[in-house]
Length: 254
Image 1 (cartoon, rainbow, N blue to C red):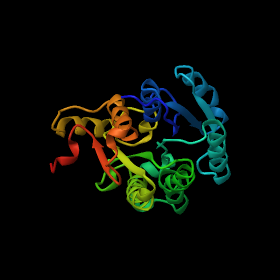
Image 2: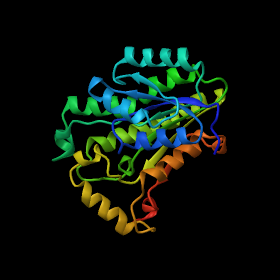
Image 3: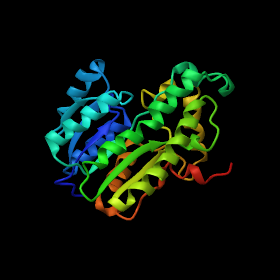
Image 4: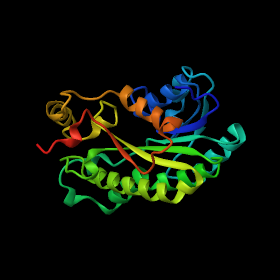
């Protein structure tokens, strides 16, 4: 798939096992120029090292929970790229203490943190991104089946993913007239470093593989291929969609 001439940014690259990195590599391999947003100085050297595998990357420091950082990130994109064609939002976080025990015991601060970082950040990112998209563009975010089903241990992150998915629909509606598409990929469980913080994650992977029609878990490569499709013109008629990449697990009632 030819993405030559397309430019954009991927939020959420933290290490070589992150979904965001798999997507960034895939877009780069297909000709896009990719910006990588990294959260803080602690991650800078790691992302710099990864970026050497890309053709002409742009590294941008950005804490997505900070409005000033977001504004500066897109000003940098404007200066370096002019306009952009895509944004990948692969940002999620909840305090580890909120991902164990009862959902009933979720703290106010823990709830606010999870919703702010995992869902709200898509809104200002879309606002800034659309100002740099000239007549068309694609915004892709990452969700999970826990948005509408109960996964013990996922707790407040399920609520955050539900909020994220409705945000996708709302943003797709508002920006459709501008030619900007907003979609989400609902990926099955992947063995990322972030996933290791979820209580019962290994059981989650086992159950998915046992019950999915394809009798297996998915790979980050399969998620990246779907993101490539959504960024490309091949998906020009798709917006507001939540696309499952889970080996068919989502269709199963038992």
